[in-house]
Length: 371
Image (cartoon, rainbow, N blue to C red; front, side):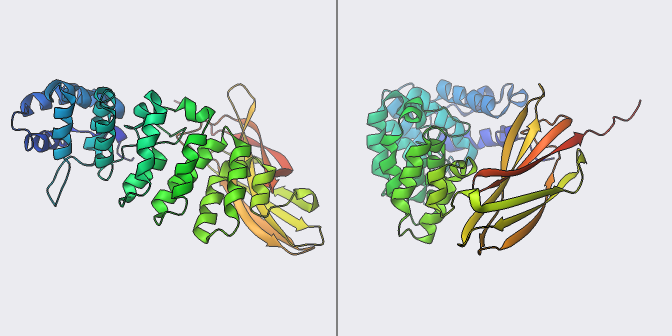
């Protein structure tokens, strides 16, 4: 079993935090900080542990935020000297978000200094939410920073729907203010930064499909292989949904002239095993076609309704009249993000975004051992 995430924040880490803060603030109450930050820690989950440590910082750092910020900045690693780093900085993000709003520029500067040692994407979001125009004016200045982590923060921290973080409703409603940031970072030399741009565009596509499809169309002509890869990753939600413009952006035509056959090896699958299936796709047109093949498993929910989940399969080029056979096995096994229910499920094959073949199958659950 993997180590629980909550254990990333533990007693020894808190002791190290105390030492590194005290090295830059001789009056820092190490013992009190450790006592407050560890009291009841074991019973808490990850974010609860972080909040406990944040509260210990509230109690032991100076109430004057600029003075506290100076201690935190001085306590970051520098010139080979150890400092606050890694998961120690999760509660520091929370401290800055809670105590720093009345010191806008100072807080964002501290988060910028922090991000090479642990992401500050969670810390900057309350500032964007509080005063979006002011925050983005500062964050936009980071796109040319020599540090890749700072450049990525400009993209990742402004994602409208960043996982595990507070959402930014104004940017969900209107993402236009962050498009210049994403455009500027689209050809960043670091894949780490470019992937963040792609993820942000994919976030936007969940609410503004046509806007992102048009954005991609405007930036794909003459694109380098790196940019093209970014734009395709940014289009993944649109491609799965079969958005016409998104498909056209990558040369996938309408599926009318593509024939698809689907065969299931067995009509019943025992949970814990796999659904074996075979696909044959034929290009019935007189021109070669790029073909994107996905499949959707329509899972039975607790109320008996079906909920689809799309999975990538293969992208191929078919000459006129050419056929391609593909075999796959989809595992039906326990995962943390889905609960499975027995009953009639469905698999559908998507060819260039259009459902082209489907069949039902029965998912069975193993019998419980008696006694």
